[in-house]
Image (cartoon, rainbow, N blue to C red; front, top):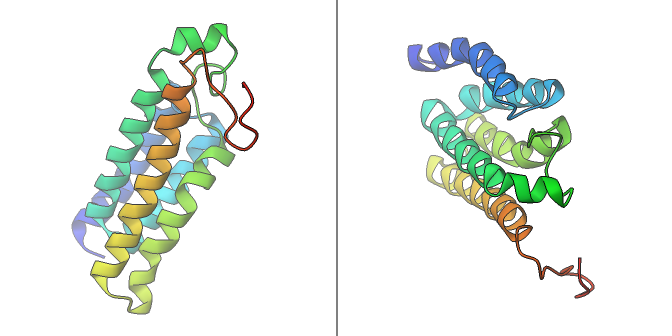
Length: 147
């Protein structure tokens, strides 16, 4: 582990506090997020962490988009948009696990591809759910009935 990765590990407690203060995470969600962030820094390094942070920012923006409308319809995540531990773990376990593959000698290109695809899938799902919930004519994808 190089000095940049160590510096990022030192930053995690500050990001933990910030995540709670801006209501991006519940306390349990912030703990899960800090753990996943640490695993990703250890496994993939600073580039993987920056990509995770970018993903988190875009996800949070999509959560805040039209928040008042979601809140009126009781469709918001948490009380004020915060993510809990189950949300964080569902979104972060595959990227965290994929970053650890570097320890087992899997090609860096293959791991990076897997990592980025996993972030992309979760971001697409989050954005679709958050922005899609603003539409008055949504339907359940499995039953094709109105939501």
